[in-house]
Structure formats: C-alpha cells, structure tokens
Length: 204
Image (cartoon, rainbow, N blue to C red; front, side, top):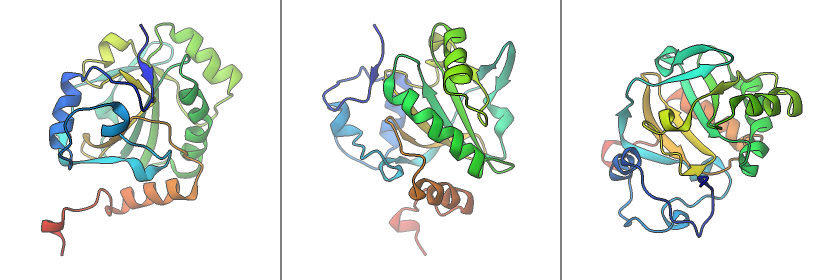
C-alpha cells in the first residue's frame, strides 16, 4: 500500500520519529486527522516549527548513480529537504518549482535536496531528467525502508527545514508553491535568522 498524498480526510499511522516531532511542536491538539493536525494553505505560511531543534541521526541518501551522501555533508547550509515519489501527483507538480527555487537562491548558504522514495529509482530518474528536465537539482533517491527510519513517509510530499547544524527545525507535509514571492522571502528569512519565529518569552 502506498503512503498517502496530502488529504484532509487521511488518518496516517504516526511514525515514532514523527511522534517525537509532534511532542516538540507548539500546539496542544491531540493526534487527529491529517488535515486537523497539519493544515496547509499551499504556502510557506503553513510550516510548523519545533520548539527545540531535533538532532537527526546519521542518514545517507543515494546520489545517482551510486554515490552515498550523508546529510551531514550539507552542514553549514540551510537545507530544504523534499521527499517525493513518481506516483504522487502533488510531488511531481512541486518539483519544477523546487528546481526554480534552487536556481534563484541555491548556493553556499542554501540548498534544495529533493529525494525520491520510489522503489524503482530508475523510473524516478527518467521522470526527473527526461520528462521534467530539471536542470538545477541533483537527483537523489533512497529506499523508503531506509529513509523511513529517520523521516515519516506516510504522507507525501513532505518538506523539512534543516538548519546549519544539521538539526530539523520545521516541517510541512504538503505541496508548497515555491514559485511565489513569499517562498523567496521565507528562504531569505531563514538565512537571516528571523525564522523560525522566537517564542514570546524569548523575544527582546
């Protein structure tokens, strides 16, 4: 059975890692339907922020065709980690906008890392390279049973923000309009350190 795409009526099975995240988020709702616990308006405004950054375990992904790359390689940069699959229409729709975002803002301080969790990475690569002709994103893939040990894969697409120290600080398990001006402002605020927002009791 495939993981679901974002569906307000879908009730996912919470992964242990996701439960750890949920306990750190700034909300007190009980675990309910996906739409209730993770509402999204399709913009960056729907990102959820952790009260405390979560140190990620050592995790590697495959850079096509055979190179193993640790997520720790990206330390020093803000990382937008996008998890997608070919069978997920919102995922495929989101990829060209992610490619454009990488072209506009990717560099020494920020990188988009899009990882296919398809069981057939060659099929995903053909869509990525041949059909979509993505020119600015690297093609990464990883077996879902491996990546699922670190990240919840029950809802796709999923977007995670990883800080310069390699810690998860925010997530949005839904399609995002990365072509919008708000997306550029979002990344610029991440780079400037004004996102995530500071708790009220820590504000100046």
